[in-house]
Structure formats: C-alpha cells, structure tokens
Length: 302
Image (cartoon, rainbow, N blue to C red):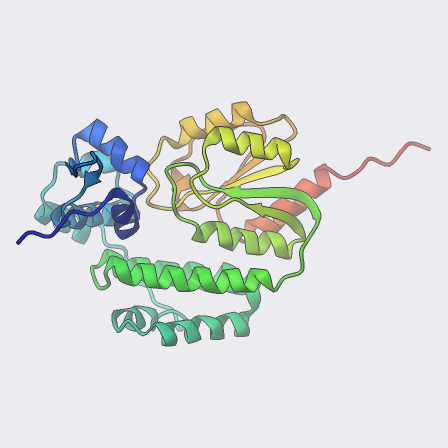
C-alpha cells in the first residue's frame, strides 16, 4: 500500500522550503507537481518530499533551484558530493551531530544551556551559534543527519533563545526595531539571534514572526512608529530578493531604514539610501551606535 501524501504545510516543515516557493516552482518549473485531494488541496508523495530535501541541501550550498529541478536523485547526490564544504569542527560544536543522530534531546539541551551559561548571551549568539549552525548544516549537507535532526536542533535553540530573551529587562531605547521575514521566508532563528543583540544594545524590539506580507509590514511600521525594519534571509532563501527589497524601500517612510541580514543576503545586489546589509551579527551593535549618532537630538544654538 502506498504512503498517503503530505499536505503543503507538512512539506514546508519537512523540507524547510516555504509553501510560497513550492507553489512558485510548480508554476515556473512544473515541479513538484502534487496530487490533489477531494477538496483540491495539494498532496505531495514521500518521493517528492525526499527529492525536495535533496534540492534544499544544494540550495544551502548556494546553488539556484532552476538548475536542480530536472535532475534525478542520483544526479543531485553527485552534485552535492562535488559541492560539499570543507569539514570544520570546533571544540564547542563537534558533539552536536552525534547528539542529534542519537535523538538525545536532553543531552542536546544541556549542551546548549551550558554554552549559554559559560559564554553569556552576546557571545553565545555571535560565537557559538554561528559555528554550531554551520556544524549542523555541514552534517546535513553530507547526509549524516536527517531533516528531523535539524528540526530538533533548531527547535531547541529557539526555545533556549526565547527563554533568555524573556529574562532580559524590557528596553525602550531607540532605534525602535521591527523584526520579521518576507512571505517566502519561514525561518526564524536568525530573527531571534538578531533580537538578542538588539535587546542587549538597549533597542526596543517588536518581533512579528516570519512570513509577513509586504503591505502589512509597511502598515505596522507606521502604526508602531518604527525606525528600523530588520529582515532575516536564510541560506535557503530563493525569492526575488532585489525586487522585494526595491518594493519595500519604495514603500518605507524616508526616515526609516531597512537592515537586512543572514546568509541569503549574499545575492543582494542593489544599494539604496536607507538600506544596510548586515553581513555579520557582530556588526549589529555597531550599526545601532551609528544610527544613534546620526539621529541624536540636535543641541539648540546658544
């Protein structure tokens, strides 16, 4: 008996590919072409989900989806082997893949909590998590862990960061920052990492979660008197980034800035007044100070 198909929400979670992108690929490339249930909703076969996981692995390595859709599973695996990153390990992170393979959630949680306690929140976010994320991504790229292992890691990190953020005193300093992602970007870990550094820098942060429609972003910024819109783009993001940024920049009030960060911004080509690309998380406190220095209240002339 064949396995039942998965609905698009489950496929989004299993593959890490936003449902908006799945629909766009269906229109643009004719793949994946799911079945439909009695209500007309999409159902994806297990084979399609596995194939999409292979595609996402290669997207994480920087390849564009258009060149991957027509390849067979064997061809995708061969391409993945050619593009595997050099293996890197740190004393902090080399235990993570093994913990994930053994599904030892409690040991994983203890490891993460210990690092947070020893390093403090700022260094945990800027030093440990980028290395840990890379280590887990490396193991995923090599096929050493599965997508559900990656989900376990991500959920544990998100849980820990949210608990750490809840223990921080509420800040009311400027800039007032709105954190979200575009409609085709479901990943939230980068937002939480950025929020931690912004909160530590004394910024008032309003976190709206992922996948916010563009018109809602603009309206929310006006209603909440936002100074900075902070967007996160993961390595797997393959939306029309330059077009989306142009659309947003044209809609923002002149006094507002857009800060874009994450591995996905490496594809961003355009430059515009008010647009700041945050290449490394360590740049955020400096960017905050720069904003404050250029928005300091003017002293009246004597």
